[in-house]
Image (cartoon, rainbow over all chains, first blue to last red; front, side):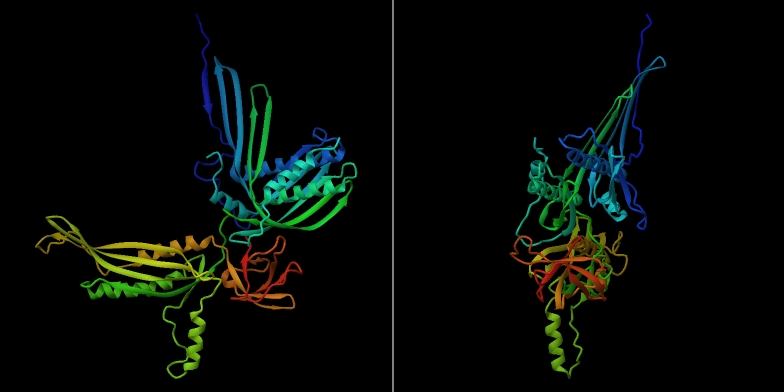
Length: 141
Length: 366
């Protein structure tokens, strides 16, 4: 009887992934600051008034921006797992995670976009990025 | 229904903000934070509290935030994403810079003093006063070793200037500028030089050179061991904050007993340079992360003169914190540097009170 069998391919892909020993390369001291941009929809936020929803959207977009900043400083760990059998894909999973410390992030702007969502831009100076990369590893290491 | 978010923010902010009346200590920095809160049901006081808590939260977040996030994409395009930010900054004190109502919400901007613990160490240089370093050589060692030990002190002290985190001054011998005839000038100089700079540090110690015998029944094995012990003192308190001990050994003899056949002994004149390289590295490590302090030399019409300048790495735009023992909450003062000379800096206070007293010690904010 012909049986199906699975061939498992497991790979760690490295989108912005870094080595196990360092957070990332040193950036040029006179380079522009690193920026992180985050968005959040107003209508799905908790709150009984429009003002409260707006404030929560600002907060959510700030967190999203902080995450993007952490990704740019410490890198992203990407894991994928694909299973195929007889040339057919059975499952395909991809997981990306980030964990790291961010210091001295300053708010560049908090902007409403068409009264539907909020955009927050945070930035960190290059010197701070280099210091963070040299003094702390990503938390997953 | 009144939203619970403001009270939640107050709780978070209260937990994160450790307002302390203790004096500002090592590694402080000044951070700003802004907070917004919706004014629900004309409750302006509640909105103000919530905005203040949010501002404290944001200020603490600027000091240190741990970010974790994960995204998962499965076979059929179903995606989940989570992000969490854990704020870990500690605020010691704060003051409200501005507050106002704005289109149905309340806005508070604060300035806070935060612990800079664990942050990257700066590029500033602290004063290091080099005081006598005695040389003690064990009896029986050759004159060449005695000479090398003495010379290594001079070279080593010169090499201290290469340290990237301190500005060394050689005060080992206290040379008399007035010569043998000007006793008054010499006396004044000794008084001045003997008083250490209170904002800096001092090292003194000894270099002990001795012979260590090893070997076995067949081989005679001796080596010259140099031990450099340096005591690092904090001039502000006079206490020894660290005793640095470095040892370096040089092979002297390695031969069969009773013969002159040498199997790789001393290759020339002894060199104690590695001792000093280790000592400089230790001092760099110890002093590198200590906040730079300065003494207030003069206060004139709001202009404050400090005892640290460009040679210490101070630049216009740096901030110093007035370190007052037993200060009340909110009773701290920050000096913003406007101009520097090689050894002095001039700045103005950010607030009208409290006044900055002459001879007070201020600490550089990171």
